[in-house]
Image (tube, rainbow, N blue to C red; front, side, top):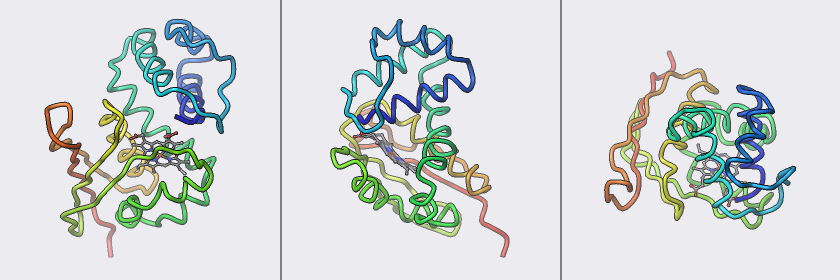
Length: 185
Ligand code: HEM
C-alpha cells in the first residue's frame, strides 16, 4: 500500500499516545523505516505488522485500532490532505455513500499504482443501504466500520454500521447495513 497509509497510522498513534509509543510499535513490528514516503509503495505486510504491533504495545484489540484508524482516515488524512476530493464526492452522508463506488477512481489519478477496494451500494432507502465491500486484502472489515463512523461525524449525521455478512465467516465478501438519521427537511 502507498506510504500514506502507514504515515496515517503514525499520525493517529502520535496524536493519541505520543511519538515514543510509535517508536516502540515500529520496533515491535520489526519495521526499520525512519520516514514513510506518501507516494511510495510498501508491502501490505508492513501495514499489517504495524497494526498487530500497535495492538500489543497499546494493549487494545486490533479491531478497535482499525475502527479508530478508519475514523482518523476520514476526519484527518482525507479531510485535511484531500479536502477538494472529499467535498466533490457529496454534501450529505447518503450522497457521499452513493458516490463511494467511483471514489477511488479519482484517487487513482493521484496514486496510479493504487489497488483500491471496490464498493457497491444496494437496497437503498431514505435512511439506509447495504454496502458491499470487495477487496483482495483480508481482515479490514473493522476499518470500513470506522470509515463509516468517520463519515457520520464528518456530515454530523448519526450513523450505525453492522456487519451482516463477513468474509471471515465464509461469505463471498463483507456486507454492511448502514443506517442513518435523515436530515430534517
Ligand atoms: C481522498 C481520500 C482518500 C484517499 C486519498 C484514499 C487513498 C487510499 C489509499 C492510498 C489506499 C491504500 C491502497 C493502496 O495503496 O493500494 C486506500 C485504501 C482503502 N481505502 Fe481509500 N482513500 C480515500 C478515501 C476513502 C474513503 C472515503 C473510503 C471509504 C469510506 C476509503 C476506503 C478504503 C479502504 C477500505 C481501503 C483498504 C484497502 C482495501 O480494502 O483493499 N478510502 N485508500
